[in-house]
Length: 128
Image (tube, rainbow, N blue to C red):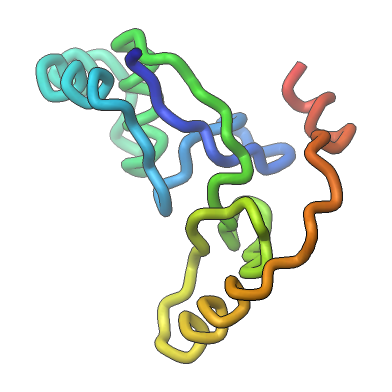
């Protein structure tokens, strides 16, 4: 299946939910399609002012890839805040110095309990 993970749904983000660049997960068939047809995106999208993550998401959509929502796959300081104790996150960003990286890594060994698997109301409203 051609698809990519939409991993950020920051409230009121003008672009809407999107794949944030700290963790870009794309299926093999989707990336193969991108390699074969990227020129359609370069020539057919107004990408010049976009970051690479927005470009890649818009391009993959243009090429028919499905948006696969997973808003807990990582914990990002720009999207929803870094929580190194998040039991569901596979990655944490940004941790750009040794001390903060090590502190986060140590905290991952003691994740806090899951409170709920239900989306908050603001998120349900945002996704309508």
